Image 1 (cartoon, rainbow, N blue to C red):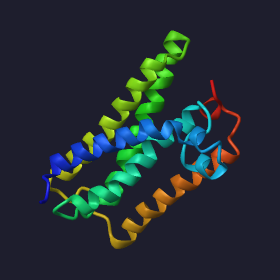
Image 2: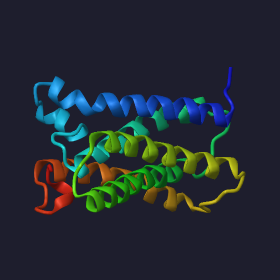
Image 3: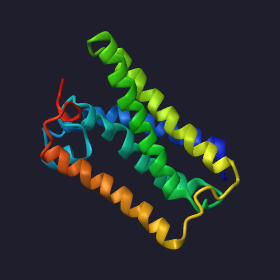
Image 4: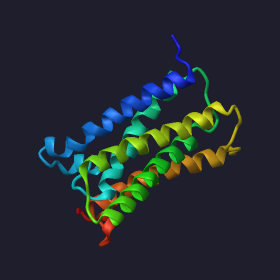
Length: 172
């Protein structure tokens, strides 16, 4: 049985959100395994917490692609932009509220995670449901999107091992 686009997006949003919550603890559960640290947050920095958006979306996107009863031309590019949008929402909301309040509040951080995930999935749903080939990419353009996904993964790996000395990469 094939699900509708809306059903698929909702199920994948729920799965990705659950994965994101669970992923928060995997590094610790692994006994601080350095390989696990490449994919799961190793500290409480904002950068490390962006893994909770990116990797669950990446994983569920593979599932979603198999579940959809159509193959959007822009699937990879849409999911890349979707995950980057969720990551941007996370950074903007976190630094806005913590800058205004002068402190970090766990409840708000959790709310931001779900807002960011919802924003990412709303973006992809609206893009897919528009019925338009919104990216108009050539075959080479699609490879640029795939390469961009790989670059984001590589950046997570590099900045986990050797984080720059700015606030985004520092644990509070």
